[in-house]
Image (cartoon, rainbow, N blue to C red):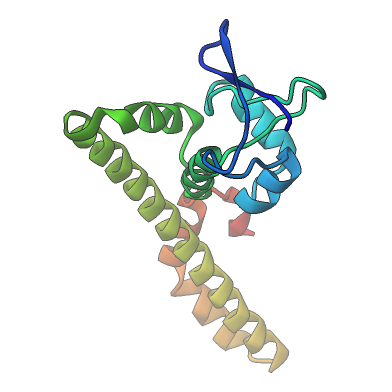
Length: 173
């Protein structure tokens, strides 16, 4: 049986042995595949403290992920997929053990992220309306309907302005 070093703090480690009670241990490759995050991201998140130090196999020095680590990686992967900043992710993860006392702040963090996602969706909708406008425009051009194309552009100033405000100034051309 291989002995695994399970970090308890950055300066202290405790020896534990994976057994049937502690569940299976996974390599970084397996953790990457299961979490959907690249191995480099897992290493980076450990380095900057988004995830705690991962247990190491003392004979090889390779990371050994527990099921608890994988559960945490699943949460992190989902938070990352929402576009949550590392700063907010770190705070959210740090608050997890706070229970009811931390629940208010957790809700605030998630509400803030929800508003950011709403804004991103609005920006994408503005860009999509612009693309639809250009499809209609080029349909008029294809059909040799210059008057229709000109009228469409003249009536579309709001769509063009919204697309420009959505963060991509190149859409005006």
